[in-house]
Image (cartoon, rainbow, N blue to C red; front, side):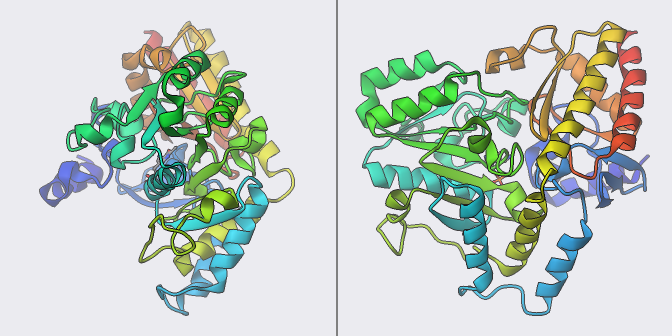
Amino acid sequence: MSRSHDLFEAAQRHIPGGVNSPVRAFRGVGGDPVFFERAEGPYAYDADGKRYVDYVGSWGPMILGHAHPEVLAAVRERLDKGLSFGAPTELETTMADKVCELVPSMDMVRMVSSGTEATMSALRLARGYTGRDKIVKFEGCYHGHADSLLVKAGSGALTLGEPNSPGVPAALAELTLTLRYNDIDQVREVFAEIGSEIACIIVEPVAGNMNCIPPVPGFLEGLREVCDQYGAVLIFDEVMTGFRVSVGGAQKHFGITPDMTALGKVIGGGMPVGAFGGKQEIMSHVSPLGPVYQAGTLSGNPIAMAAGLKTLELISAPGFYEQLTATAKALLDGLQTRANAAGIPFTTNQAGGMFGLFFSGQPVTNFEQATQCNQDQFKAFFHGMLDEGVYLAPSAFEAGFVSIMHKDEHIQATLDAAEKVFAKIAG
Ligand code: PMP
């Protein structure tokens, strides 16, 4: 038996399900989760010393590859100065300036410690600012696990068949209207009826928690129009897409300006960080400037800021996103060719450095199509690739990620593995 197996047994004694975040438990694919020991560049090494080409990248943050020497050096330099002060540091201003430079729709930004906190706080602010309670989200989108957002959610909630979590008071869930992603007509209909009661629309500008589903042309534009027309706040949840789809996020890529943005993952370079921000007019309602309360003991933590800042500096290099996008495209083109050769219905989606793999013969542009893909083939593919030393997200409802350290040789090794695995699946 593998050491991962033994570690998983031990973990389950005192950790619910043996994991500190549900998708890690492999419930979506079956079998024991892989316990990791260390990671470097495009590779992660498990507790038995086996090496994997990693396409999860800690669910997005490791865009520079694992253990990037310059990021580690930035962290080391801060370590001797102390881990946390609970008081302002210059680093936080440097971070805020950098974020507002890279994401021009943000005039002001508040740092938090996770994506969940970022969206939860953005939501409270949108409600406090508009004086309205109802919110609109989309089925299959995941915005962290705040009560109002755990309604028809994606990611682990979807994988584990609990998109509506017990424990979320019905009175609160009723205020969350969940509409169909990429269906702007439905959004217009709902706003025509009750638009004046809706505080905000929160959306993943590229959905990455029901696998990877880019917006169809007109969808994000339509959301912008509707929010303008009814005085609702448009929140882009760019926790996943921020600094991932382009240096300015999906909003830059698609040319749509939201009122508020939630960030996470890449902004912390692998440390626990999130952020929310937007127009000054809205952000000036946040405490202590305004009455909407929001706080955090470790918010703006100096070690996390050091890792994040170095990451943002390195991803700002010219040509970074062209390379990242080309890497993802080479991977997807290669997989498509090999699936076709094996006669397996297969399609892919891509936005910059994030991608989706679907066992379906049709293009996938919405939640329903994503859930109708062949789950058995996905599971077989996942486990086949795992055996071959390729680590993919252990669920059909998660996006995959490449890093700048994924080079031709790693893509080629992945494609060689896929050729074998597709052949096996085809029988
Ligand atoms: N929003 C999106 C779009 C996400 O993908 C995630 C996490 N995958 C979150 C919010 C929540 O972030 P965290 O897990 O850091 O709380």
